[in-house]
Image (cartoon, rainbow, N blue to C red; front, side):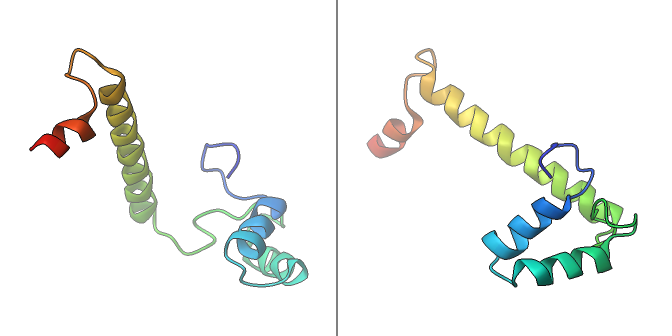
Length: 94
């Protein structure tokens, strides 16, 4: 979701993902699917509405945070002169 809080997808976000990114169906079909999935009267579709367990959702969020931390660590290492410069350069010399 665009809020970054995991509160679910709005209709527009759902349509964008399903029609644009996934190219699964047309916008009208995505709207019907959204309304069928939504448990709160069509305001948002959450991970629960999609059949994702709380454990699976927590694992997903943990993995997402881990990957983001790895990207930040790599970017910091590339910028850091104290660590000897670019890690790619070090690997190339080995």
